Length: 453
Ligand code: SF4
Image 1 (tube, rainbow, N blue to C red):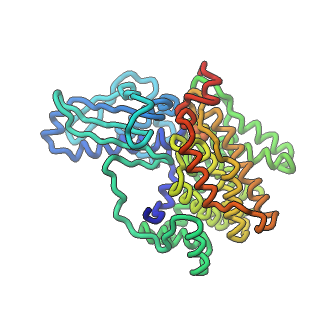
Image 2: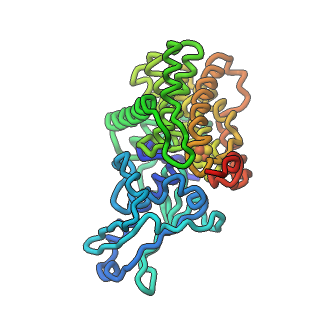
Image 3: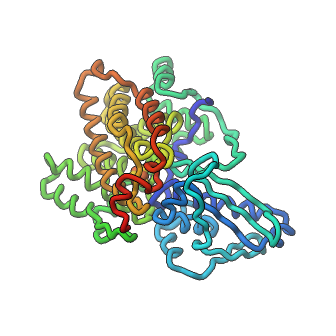
């Protein structure tokens, strides 16, 4: 395999919830397909009379609850995840009128309800497959088969790795990464920054200010969530809980159980914002978007961490996310929730250990402990909505991250018998063995316990 060459801002992306593979990836596909339509010769565009879009796998099984049709519609209309206003998707829900899609003089009419929810089980290369076709009366003028591979990453049949720079310090696993740190006398955040610059050609100053923007969006999602009450969208009628939990944490002056309540409140807050379809950061996915913001909020508001420490911690967290994505998966549709909340928790545990200034080994151990105790976690969202168990699961993931940090930073490093590479391998194998009923299809587990949704 080639070395890890994922950019920080591919992993940590701003976009609308509730699910990166079901909203951000599909929105990108809609946008990309319309660009392809515009690039067609005029006579082909003029011959086009309809658009056909089919969703497969978990996109078909839970696309309805995840808002996939609306996200595709927004992409077709020219929205990109990062700049899409929070409330833009809501308008596509109940409107029966087809939308006009403009492609250099050609107008196509399309409605989100026209998107076909096709087979859940299929033979395409990736479970989250989307087929986009532009048709004339008697032929297919254009077709692209897209794969939403998790965390908002989009691929398609024939996709090739863009010809970008190569990492300054190539690695595929934690063992190789550690070797670079040792040999070059680098700290983890320095290596990740150097690789980002080498990969993207972007200077350090710009990367750091972009990281600050990511942190700001994460903090904003917590701030919004803890002051918003009411019921989340969808048929479950799920009550928002973050503001109530926050009130209890405050009453306890954030001490003792009040501190734990604060971690819970912050994770619930960002997750509820995600479930409402508002903008969050994929960390590493929308479904798991509450864990890292909760830990950042705790670090800054309750543990006196400076922005620079949080930034460095986030770079260490990204390293864990890269390793998990490269050697296993960050997609619930591929490996279950261990790849979403499990990875988010491992990233958050690394973040807190690194930001608190512990030795590198403590950072790795914290990440390993958090990941280890999410192994086997299934993805079974009730009704296909990223609400139950997802929202509370983020709170659990954040608390486990904090606990993993406590274990790793308190006990002697020699006690640690399992390294992060081994835990990631175990996650990949467990995900491989897991029935597809438990991989974001809502066909098993908790999803079946509330079928009335
Ligand atoms: S159960 Fe986990 S992986 Fe599945 S949708 Fe919810 S947060 Fe994502």
